[in-house]
Length: 256
Image (tube, rainbow, N blue to C red):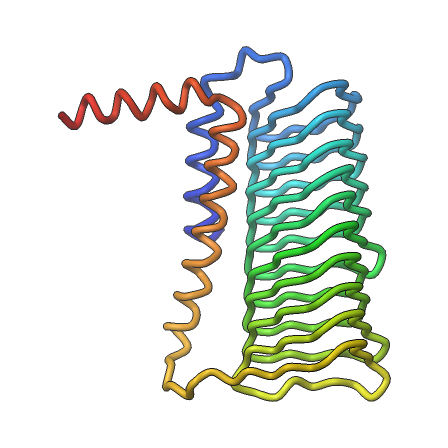
């Protein structure tokens, strides 16, 4: 597990532990959800496998998280490997080494990690913001898309504008962008003959600057770490705002 993911999960677990008594909270090494949940659900563990549906929101921190049944509202997830195979009724916010979406997302998607992929059967009803080492969209996004990555590949369909900041940008055969494509890269994008951009193509090349691979890796690692910690902070605030504020007050009192 990367140190970024490990730090995020550890912090989330520390925040979640005081709520073990809540009926909608589960914490264990391995969690297999087999019964439908009518309310919000909060999960923390090393491996989480969701086989039953949740009518409310899901907030989860795990090394491995697999969502195989519908989540009717929002899904917030931090982990090393996150697979969302089922529909999510509203928004998805995820930070992990690997984030894969295979179902229909009813709202928007914010995801950060080493590898981000929207598979061919995935769809996003609103916009998507994606950051990672490699970002792939094989499915459909009905709104606009913003990407920060080393490599970006599109084989699917973006209905709105696409703003891509990446070292390598590729539109594969059959790819379609319904609006404007903005590419912010030092290299020219590779666009297949039968890929289409409905509006204009804008290429913005940044000033040439020598940059070592480890510097680029550190930049993307820091970006992922920051976004993952934001997701973890959301876990803390949404779950136990009074506990979080109490912990902050105690820390300040101890420092004084």
